[in-house]
Image 1 (cartoon, rainbow, N blue to C red):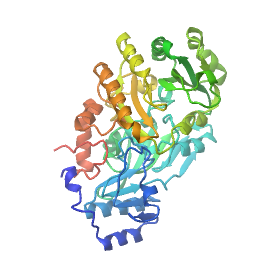
Image 2 (image 1 turned 90 degrees about the vertical axis):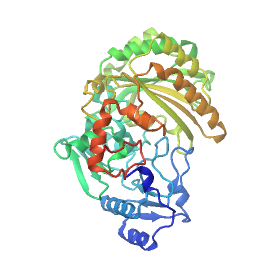
Image 3 (image 1 turned 135 degrees about the horizontal axis):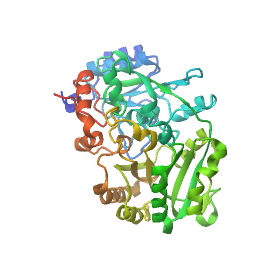
Image 4 (image 1 turned 45 degrees about the vertical axis):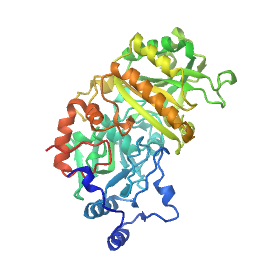
Length: 470
């Protein structure tokens, strides 16, 4: 059955079935017209505006099972919402049912095994708060308001990637509600094919109600931003690349083009200037942090240097204030093996003309521990790439959308021919089946087979969709 077959003929719902679902849920079922419907349907990316027929705010796995069974029986399309950060708005669906997990935000840390059980609606800030008290961290992303579910299921690139791997490399098990309403556990020992698929395959296979992660001893790191004037951008990008390709795993740092925020503690003379930046995270012994970054400081003295000891949750949340929910977002992504003189020059060309103050480009290193995992060991396909790149147009004003989108597309089109192919699924827009296939490379066929086993009718299709094998 194709995705289109799930589209309801109208938004007319069976009133008795809706009331039965409402009675079954411990959480709330929100319908259009209710006072908080608009706030409940609102997404992180305000460029996306969808109107679901119902929003089931689940509080436990039983609620999720009831919601899945209702949608299947009523022929409603389903979207799964964790943090709602998804760029193309795949956490919601017009005229369908949103299974909203945001009320499921419990975190349990076992200090003896250093494992962390996380409910499906958690944000990474919830996890950081809980683990930090035990001197632990789970490898995650770069913004603490990101949802655990979406980031994890797409792979999970972050500050600890070079030392401990992607988020999925630290995933031990999931509890997941399948399209037929069953709750199963997927791990290396149980439903191993499903466990392989959810480590990078996104929300294609069901609704994950809880994740079990391996935590690691991380508490205070040596981190923060260094910034240089734009006329040094080419030199900084080249030096950073060579440094990060051979650096010890404990050193991480992403390169980007940014506009300096017009606030303290940034020096007045640099505020609102476009600059290049590297945001560092050294997770080795704290007393060795300054020595670890000494080669960069000596080779290219930064104009702004805020790198120092910082609690890991503070580094994770450093940019949350710049990017509140409700901005306009447009992303384009690619993987790269390395940047030569030509690609560096293209980066400087486009990165020197950011369309809005919040627009940016980031290059994340994915070598180190993440690069030592086999290409076919998880669904995440680009283990041989060294870098994940994302071009981001972002602004509060919808009037700037066309300009941001044009800049993002032009920038991406200029660099894409030099890329490794595909893009990080967590950072691509709704770009079609060909782009999804490219993003999974040689793992796509196996993913389609797993999809056929666990979701043969493509019930879960509001995602970066993998069609079931025929």
